Structure formats: structure tokens, C-alpha cells
Length: 411
Image: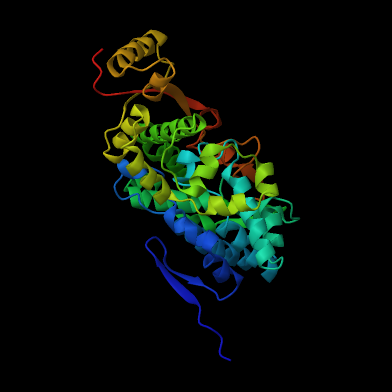
């Protein structure tokens, strides 16, 4: 019997991505993974950047391509990576985001409370491991950083991992924000392994400097863009209101899979003890939320109806951002105007006016370093050898405060 030809996918970022006929392709064709076609990579960011309609599916395949290149480079430099380890690390990066729910990070704590998507990803991996007769066991060890070769986990999760290398370049491409267009090939070509840790050759310093700066700029320009913050917080409030109405035995439209999570809180223990919950979660995607919004805009509940209309019609709340907390007197004044105008009580008005802060971490060398291999053989943190990057600025936590409220309020 002739061997099947490798499958080829044309990616707009990297060109042709080749997929071998192995367990990798079987996982990609599995319904759990195919669901990622319907989970947006950047939540509601397309309301600001019209081209940002790419999905977690795109991102996962991009990561698979990059990690394949990284393995080739590391082997060329003498690192021993067995076929089993190669396959396992590819599976781990392919499935690293499979635990995301609808709109990715936007609703991470709205549909399932206090369970990081990484833990859900682990549950999916374990379920797939059962289906594929234990062939994902090594991938799970690498993903959880329980395998002896720690550098394999670093490729999956670190301050210079394959995940970040792909999403920065991909998000830059689809949003049109050029500042995120990093040199992924150059960085990967500079990879090496010393003492079981990934290091970057000294001649790659400038590429790493650009990577760190690009990440910082992309956070402020895209991920923490003020309109993106406003829209995603509004969507969170819609789900919160839906939960509240269901708790009060009010009838609202919801697919069974979504209702399962709106009706009750589920812990990670529930997921482990009730296998059907993971299947319910796997049925959820962005389309479910959109369909609900279209039904909810006709709801008798003013809050649910109004917020749903605002998202669907892009009539978003106004958002102000500053470096210090907002004055309580201003918040109280706007709240009183809204309560009078829309006949809301003190709890209900919080759906239309709210304040919080966002935080941007650029680089934290305490728990994890980007290490540079100098020509003399010394290994130094990037901040020690870069003339552009100062540690005091990089590790500083930058907070900005925001206040959201309706635009038609005259103060």
C-alpha cells in the first residue's frame, strides 16, 4: 500500500504548512479541535480592527508550523530530540489553547468561573488520550512541565515561547497593527539549548529586543485597546445578567450547552467527576453567544435587551482611561442620572456604569528569563546585555484605570 501524501494547508502568514498523516492529523480532524474554527482569537477586537476575524484554529496550526521549525533548528545544533518527543511537543502546542471558550479571553471567567483555560485544555488532552489509547501521555507530561527535558515545556510556555511568537505576528497581520510584526524565523534560528534551557545566540539580541517591545505595544494598541475593553466588559455583563435572570427563574432563550453553565457554577472537580460537562463545553462557540444576543435583544428585561442591542449594533459604552482611580463623586453622579433616566436600582445601574483597572506586564525575570548565550560562553538575562531594554522599566507593572458609562449622559 502506498503511503498517503502529506496534507498541505496554505497559511497567510507562513505559506504552506505540511501535516503528516499521523496522530497529529487525526487530532486536527477531531471534533474537539475543529471547534476552534469557531472560537475567535481576539474576542471582540474586530469591532475596532475589522480584519481581526482569525480563530484559535489558525493560531494552533501556526504554532505547529513554528515548533516544527524550532525542532529542526535545535537538532541541527546538536540537541537530542527523539521522534516520540517531537510528536509529543507538537501535540502539546497544537492543543495548548483547546480549552478556550467562546470569544477566548473575553468570556474566560463568565461561562466558567475561576477555571483557567489551561486546566480545561488538560481535560481535553486527557479525554483525547483515552480515545487514542494513551498516545498523548508524553504530550500531557510536557504540557504540565513534568517531563525530564524542561526545554520542551519552555517551547510551549515561557516568556519566549512558540505561542507568543505566533500570536504576535498573526494578530499584527490581521489587525493591521504593524508594531507586532516580529521576526519569528530569525528568533527561532537563534534558539539553542544549554543546561536544559532555551537560550538565544548573542547575534539575536536585536530580534529579542524587538519582540519584547512589540509585545508591550500590542497590549496597549490591541489587547487592551479601550474600545475592546468596553465591548468585552459589556459582554461579560450580558452573561452575568443572563445568569441572574435564570437564578430568578426567568425564562430566557439559551442552547442547552450554554444553559448548563449559566444555570450553575461548576468547579474543576465537577468537570472531572461529570464527563458530560466537557462535552457540553465542547459544543460552545462564538455562534452560540451571537444567537443568544439576537434573542436577548427582544427580552422583556431592559438590561439584557439594551446591552445585547448595544453589542450587536456597535453602540458601545463610552470609556475613559487614566493613570489614577476615578473619583467616586463622578461615578455616583453618573449613577444617579442613569437610575433616574432608566428607572434602575443601585444594583442594576452597575451594568451600565463600572470602573476597574487593566495591567500590562512586559517582562518578569524573576520566575522565567530570556537568556542570551554570549560568544564567550556566558549566559546572561536579556536585560543585562541589552543597551535598549532597562530592567527597571520592563519589570514595572503598569496599571491604567477605566470608567465605562453610556455616551448620552450630560455631566
